[in-house]
Length: 239
Image 1 (spheres, rainbow, N blue to C red):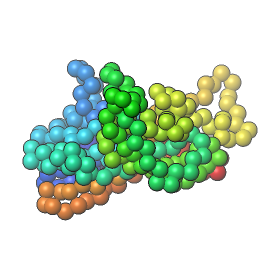
Image 2 (image 1 turned 180 degrees about the vertical axis):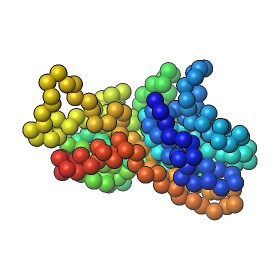
Image 3 (image 1 turned 90 degrees about the vertical axis):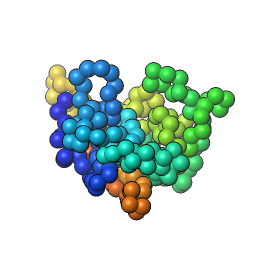
């Protein structure tokens, strides 16, 4: 898969940090030994001492902070540890859901090999706030504000509300096909319909943190093409 040049991903840069808009299907770090392109490698080719300060799932797009030196890495890592970094995600979920500052705080247990489950007994504290932004007939655009940073946190917390993210098959979300929302949609003979989005619809829309010079900064990451296309089609055919 071809990814844009690293410089084209940069949303903000100063002497200490870079904030990029991570494309979908690009791993944050080395997943395994071998030749797979990942964000860390692209960042190091751009800036020798680059270090990734947090991770996004491979399919998740959006704002990600990269440190350019050890001091900045420590500073951002401490902000994450103390829950001072504010993150806002946008997700397209199945069904019409009216979430008005809904707090979900079900504990999450990492069961290994990329799997997590809800466990009140053994899970770690996890907290996410949800706010509905836009309603369609069969879907809702929601804002997700995770306070903690557990693996798959937003995805599993939404699934517990029977509001799986569109396309998130791991948590019972189904891909969106144009034939399901557009009346009189005809596919040519022998053609197999592809989903509008080939991943789950989750995007890290905004991040707020403190720069080394002490100033708070908020960076927002525009939607990638696939997310924007799905929203436009829902507005057109599912409103």
